[in-house]
Image 1: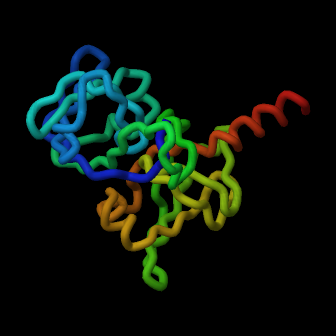
Image 2: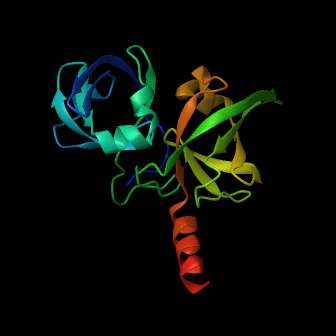
Length: 196
């Protein structure tokens, strides 16, 4: 489990394809604190550390993960948002994040408004996922509050600190992002569907 509060950024230093899998080499200030078998979220995708070096580590994304997330779009030099799994008994500063991406979305607009940055995203019109005004959403692993919720589209306002300390500062219109919808909302949607 995660909280959607990004600890640091990592830099992709090498990508190795192996059959349908992708070994992702990441350089990060967290590297020396990691151990093999540890879970860490990369742009909101929970992956297992398979190798640790001095200032870098390796995780593997399988075909299923690559098909459903933006990790298949990674290039050497890209920056990824990193968060280690939460510790039991710690404060939950964001919201409950599983690290299981529901689908990808696309950034369709970005503006700067009164000291914050507003990003608008569109997602699959055929998917059952929904957002609600002031509800929680995870975009590339970042816990955010939905504003301007529309059918298959929503916006988020990013405070300057989050903008500077995540890969939002590099995001462009047309970029593909990982979306994890609020887990409570998903259960409610499933229950409503079962009773209708």
